[in-house]
Image (cartoon, rainbow, N blue to C red; front, top):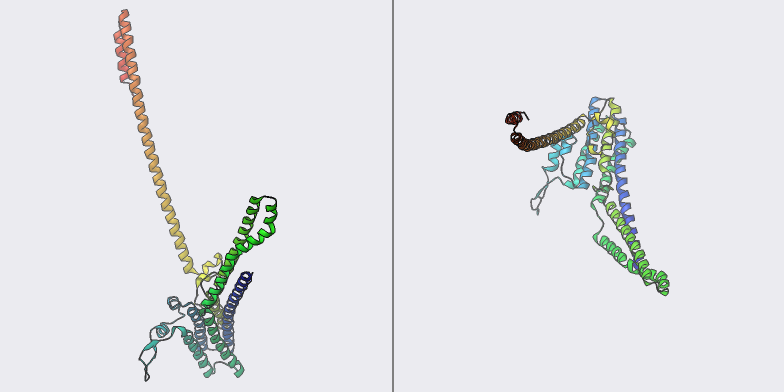
Length: 399
């Protein structure tokens, strides 16, 4: 009973903690989407009219989306920026400053002189600084008609974005302590091992005694073994399934099926902020098409993505061509085999016909010779002439 209570309490506590961790990660991603939408909404509302302001707003949107993407890359420990460079979300100069240029050096007295590039764990601060600088330039040039409370609200949203980054980092990079997981796993294993003995003893006292009194020992053993096996199997499946779910929920920013849909939310941020900006510009705004594999549009809307549609058509055409070539090969082999079979059957038929002709000819020759001999013995004139004429006619008859 001690292990029953300890195992149940441990597994329930772990699942509760893992679900709380997953809920915190989900709330952080939702707050990221909400802050991005609110920030673009207020900047578009407070900004004055002008083409230079429109260009600045597009640049602000790019920095905002880049900040969100760098959060995801940080928590996933990703260092490849090929897709971001290709779509224009990250410029080559910015990529050089992030990954190649020296950002700090230990050149003060007592330092070892070591130089370091921009820290990979602080790349989100780089895009946040560019975002703040662009908004600050609009404020200094008085191109944002915002009162002090409204300006403070914009600055507060930027601060909240930085706080979300800290929350995401805390949830994504800090795992459960190893001693805690080991102790909980050991308690569950001991409980599952002792469950069979406990069930066997309890069921023996409740059911087997009656059968033993009736001298039906085989029925008693069979009933005990069957019930204990079912209960132990069900308990093991249940506890191990709960443990697997808890393990997945403890890593909410992972790449599993039960992880938070970070890529889908980033794609939504990109498209939604572009749609918000289009209300001001009066025309369509090109978004960065982040993570196209997260697309949820139906097949009827594939024509909006011509490049992807062309690639899909090319794949389908190549597949159909491959099927046609394989079908033609199979048909050619079948026709060749059929021709070989017909030729073999024809040769066999000719051989059989020739053999039959030889047998018939030998039989006919023997018959004619007997007929001629019989007629010659009787003394009829012309018997030899009849026999020779028949043989000559048979030999010259076409097959």
